[in-house]
Every structure is written in structure tokens, then in C-alpha cells.
Length: 180
Image (cartoon, rainbow, N blue to C red; front, side, top):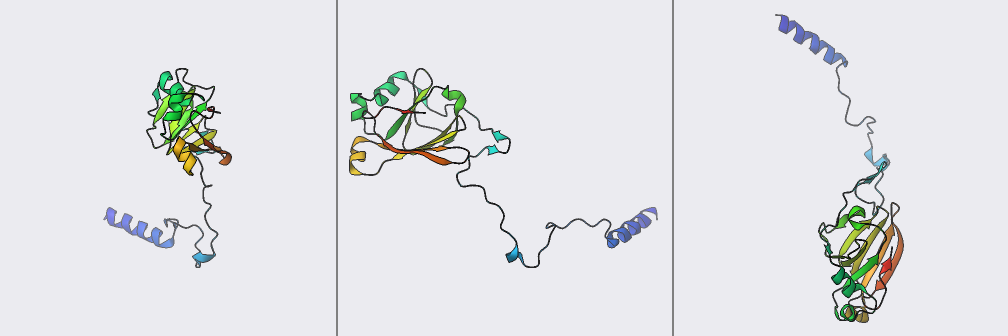
């Protein structure tokens, strides 16, 4: 009997609306076409970034440490670099890459880091972020001469606004590594 009276009390309160749950849409609009569109994230926003900053894991993501390979493939007048036509781009930095590379695409990168741990080579078809400030894209360059020499199209975007800062064709054995 006590259970039945409790049930009746709950039923009467629920029917009065006191226990009613809020609707999933706090401002129901009979005409959803008139609702303002939801804000979309800015194109190219870096994954892992938000109002409190970025928090992407850092590391070398498969880049091999080899001073020998880096210099043979990246030094401006290296004959090996001129003969190796695999599309790549080389970069000089002054920061320890294992603590400042993040957000790689693909998740395992292909390339080399020099003996100092601050300069690196990326092969075409890859993207990586440096110090949560620069997003680096390395792709195949267009054009017959570019293909002959294994030149890469390098685009570097400044984050978080994703502003294009560099868009150049880079050729191993012909150009100095790009300073970042």
C-alpha cells in the first residue's frame, strides 16, 4: 500500500510538470530553416588546439636520426642530393625536434633528423607541425624540370590562424635547407 501511494504521488507531480525534463532544444523553433547556422571551426585549425592552447603529443614520429643521410641528401652542393630524385625538402631549425614536432600526417613520418637533432628532411606527401606555431607541408612540385630534379613544393602555415607564410619549390642539391 505504501508503494502504491508513493507511485500515485510521483504520478501527480510528474503530470504537473514539476519533474518534467528539459527538452533537448531549449529554444524550440517551429521553423528550423530560420535558425542561425552553427559556427564552424576555421578551416585548417590545428587538431589538439583549443582556448587553453595546444596539447599535441611531441616526438620524432618515425624520422630516423642520421647525420650522414641528412647531409648527403640536404647539403646544397651535394652530388648525392642532386642524383637522388626522390621528392623531399630539408629544414634547418635551432630547436630540439623531438620536443617540438607534433601532429604528423601520416602518423609515421618518413625522413631524417641530423646528428644535432635540430635539422630534418621530410619526403613528399607529409605534414608536420613545428613548435605548435608552423604547419609544414611537403608535396611533389609540378612541372617537368621539378620532376627531373625531385623538387618539392613546400608550404608553411603560421598557426593558429593558418596563414600561408611560405609557398616555394625546393630542390635538393640546388637550394640551402629552409630556415625555420
